[in-house]
Amino acid sequence: MPLKHAVGVTSCFLAELWALCDGLNLCLSRNFTAVEIEIDAKSIVDALSNPNYANLFVSSLIDDCKCLISQIPQMRFRHCYRETNRCVDALTHKGGCLAADFVIFDSPPVNITNLLDFDLSGLYLNRLCPEMLFSF
Image (cartoon, one colour):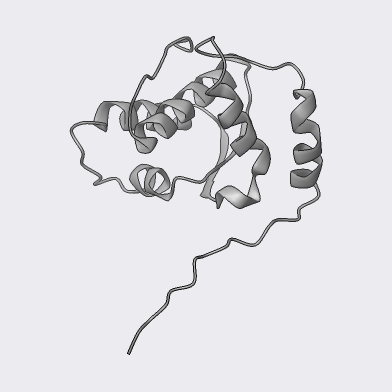
């Protein structure tokens, strides 16, 4: 199970793809039979959903993810906006500050519990879009 690696400096797309691959490996190692994945990278959802997706740079990693997904009996995979899962966003920022390449928490870190409660409530924050100004 290749979980301990440093992604290094890369694109958001590749970082999310590596995180997905690690998460799927973790699910399989813990024998999860039903998994729901919500990811804010729509491009990854599209790439995994499209059997004709072609990108030589990431095709092997996409294929690995598809193979891992096929090994989980009940899988739900969908796009969500970052604002609907603030806990994951906070953990991502926390991970960027850790010395270890890969960390598994047995329980949520203290500074995440409020966000986890908010996410569990089913409430979400509105996505703010910058107002576009037009001159005529």
